[in-house]
Length: 161
Image (cartoon, rainbow, N blue to C red):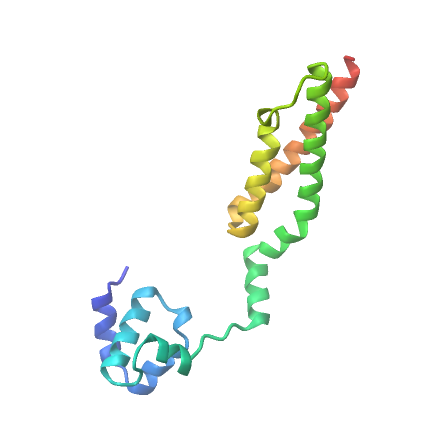
């Protein structure tokens, strides 16, 4: 990985126009390159500070490009599957409630009885807020496993009642 000093040398050799191009597209560069470009631009009086930079050259997010990028990363596919995942989660909560009531003859429920659905729900929320393709794929497989195990549990519970 290149350091700020190496990027500083590169930015010092750029013309003012090239340096401004780097500033305009700064969200596509490494952090050290951005820092070096901003520092060099301030030295050359092209900008006063970062606030001036943000006023002169705001970062514009292309919404079409953003959707394309989210689709490439798999987030939109995961988002489309969220309804199914939540249905399995709700189904699992209900089934845990029923099983605990049947097995324990109506004893009071505790939060520990619901450890798996709660952990599952927290994982879904975390993946939705901080999307990771690998984490999403794992959650989809866990959802399938949960659905299968819940259905098997229903079948076996009623078979032995």
